[in-house]
Length: 387
Ligand code: NDP
Image (cartoon, rainbow, N blue to C red; front, side, top):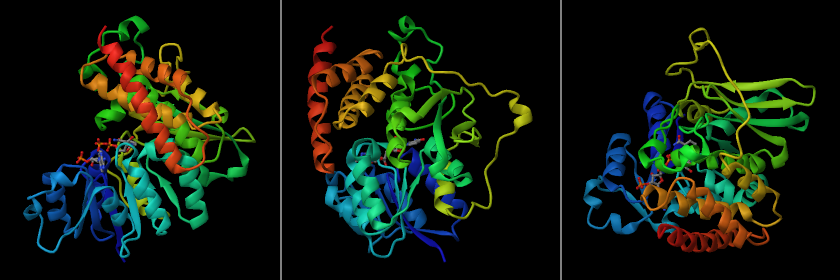
């Protein structure tokens, strides 16, 4: 029987890749719901192609007067509460969560509460509320299947050994477009340069995060909660070819690695078909043509975002939520051409110096810390813009 799936963030980069996988396996999946924030035209085109009956819009003003783009009988869900309602739809089995930012937290909690399997791409969900999301999933017996390629890699490696025997987790990073730039060279890089990722095609926010390496910091935070391994046992290695996505070193010294081409359809297909395997792949690694795979340690001097992220993981407070809030403001300012590239991590560092977050007591308190960090970071950014 076809699996009934709801895709959150269907109009985005991950959403598009998920729909590509489903398009090739229409007999196995039935898309019963989709969401976007405001891109109603694209959402309507997807709804038409996949005959989707349930549609959610984050920004309900975007839908006003445009319901006619969808077929009659479409059920609309609007705003934050609408997204949560769609995540709890009775007739659906799995939620694929690919909303960028913290707006994915509410629907993810709702999906878990309704005992739906969650295929999770949205990293902010774990960065900000990982402790509570994972506890909620454990209590409800709900599988959380990671789509983020490195975490999907770890997840696959762990199928080759017992979690109790894990010594270290290794996440790889391409190093981004400025891997070999000096600190001086990075001072004047343009938005266009930062958006030119050497190995992955992704949404803008995550592409800038890859260029600063904040993305790898966010991924260490994600892995900490997903796999219940403390940050100091999670390593990051630069691997410019982006073929090996993750490795697990077991206590006997054996290392299991996961490899595939840089195409998000691989981890997405793995989660969609889990625990089965997708019967076909677009293309895979040609090792003879690849010739070499390189690995080296990242420079935390040139890329301070990584050490800032580790500093947050060591905090007893929800400093990771502060990192998330401050970094999202800084990335937006950089994309708007208001600040220089290194000011992204300078804003995050200064916000963390001002505010280390609150005790980790609830999802709500973490969201409040994000909001407070956003406010502080905006003030810092406005001051920086003047110089
Ligand atoms: P995109 O920016 O391409 O897409 C984001 C999606 O989220 C869009 O559908 C957008 O709708 C929707 N959205 C944005 N804000 C809201 C909101 N407030 N309420 C409801 N929906 C909203 O992002 P990506 O696909 O690149 O990334 C999605 C998530 O997956 C991120 O957390 C990212 O870190 C993670 N991820 C992405 C990878 C990638 O390869 N792209 C790899 C691994 C993880 P609209 O189109 O209307 O704006």
